[in-house]
Figure 1 (cartoon, one colour):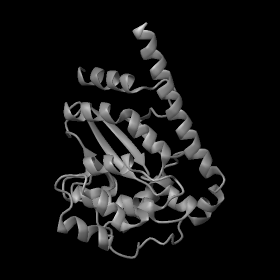
Figure 2: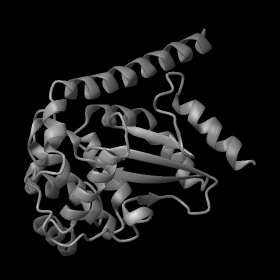
Figure 3: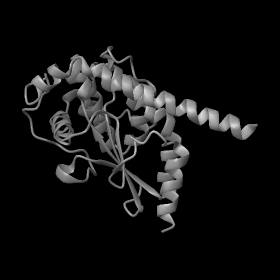
Figure 4: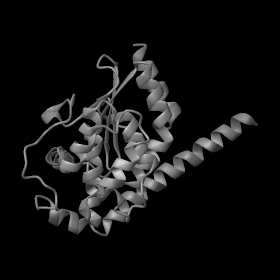
Length: 241
């Protein structure tokens, strides 16, 4: 009986994740023409300044924020938008498993930040939140702040993250983050141009939407049978060689 309950819970979780993904992608379908029209145009971002990558950023053009040990045998590449409901659904379902695997040294995660909701619905919340997350990386608090942003995500059409005061207020939930260096970085939009470049890389990557989740290069988010337990099994099997 308990096993059946667990299976039912897993089915419900998968349904919720898939449904949220459909909402995120199809919700943008109505404005896809706007998104396409805005590619390469000024979306209100301050992209005129120098591209300043956050501390420790890796990969091509230093667009990936790494979490976990470099020596891990598995790498999870995650493209996310802090305003995207499907990204929140993914994080809510997989957060504890990903933390468990990174803490154990079995998984490295490379986070890439996108701003597709800004492009589709207008506003700057995706960009400003991404900049603040990059500022948190400079202070060594990216994973914690990343989680706080998704846990406190406003409704998709509410551009609350456009307000730096909101982002600063949420930083107080992370011990040691609300520092003068972080506040200055958020206020000046130090990494805004970097965020714009990251979003351009997302647009050129041919991805269908956020989140896009790749395990060792394979898109696992499109796998309707994927669960946190399955992800854990795949990573642990790779770790054992």
